Length: 219
Image (tube, rainbow, N blue to C red; front, top):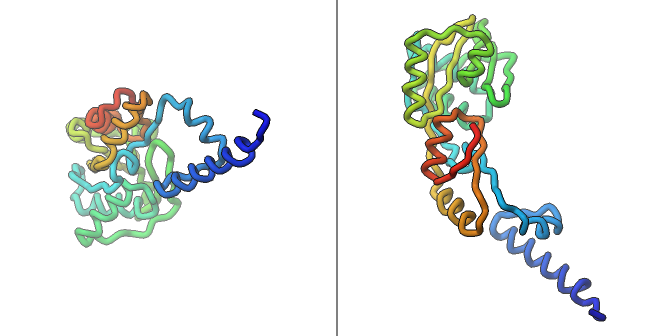
């Protein structure tokens, strides 16, 4: 108690060693207070796309009232300005098929909804079903049924439309990271609960949550 070495030498040394070891494992600490607070963590919230999953998505299926090439060309032209993994998958699918992309203007991304840009004179919206309803876009019974069917297989399903009408659906799939299951189980062993929060649709989120044995998720 009389000797200050524990505070003056041992504690800073322990913090320095901890930061160094963390850096070796790819973990960066903002400050030493993190070490003190970390012991009280009882829940970890994970994002899905690119965190629990690889984020290397690919287009599985397209259902459209137009020719598939025409539809994909318009949608990829919008998504070409986005950095989102889903957008990149759509653009890559178009390029693999040598489908030409058109210039897009007035691009904007709407969090939790989708993206929008003007292509060939039309303002094209690409996003989830909820956003299409908010935009008051009409959807045919055929496309509504296709959307529902694609959802049941755990895909991420986007709808796209312009001029007040939904023109098609595009299903995109992702793969769970090889390390995700072990990570969730390791946290469970430490009595830390894992939950998932994602902007993706509930069906896609539920598929990943079940595979990783994550009981709680928000989509």
